[in-house]
Length: 185
Ligand code: NI
Image (cartoon, rainbow, N blue to C red):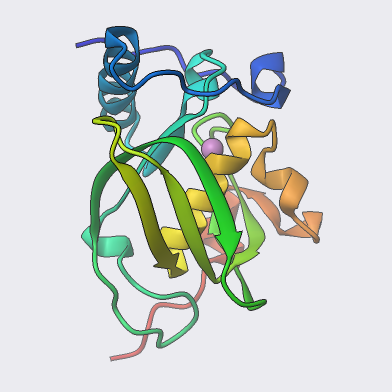
């Protein structure tokens, strides 16, 4: 088990397009993914891209925990939780032109969150760690976390996707002034 150091905004590795993942059989790649899983569990996030641990290769991991398995927007229906998934060389295609705004944070930008527009539904293609082709459709939070992680492979951080920087906040102030009201009983 190894917990890797997470690069923070300002480090050039986060602004550099990543190289292809390489052969899935490579033991180094398996170790990288195991270490990314340990690092994500330790940091308590929902996704991680290899450049965030200073490895400029096209590898992401993500999950949708049960408490986030909800569509976006007030009253949105509950959707399924997604177990931890590793994807090599992910590629995204939007399905339809609908977008949604929701709050995101990033382990490379600790303490902050921002309101980010994303495609509501996407198709994700790539390879799993055993070299099986992956082809899945995702929506809501699931689609959001995938778009966030794939952006890391292209040197893009979520503030670069924001269209209103007044919606960028420290977590404490967000909870005090910007958090959506608790749903009424
Ligand atoms: Ni991130």
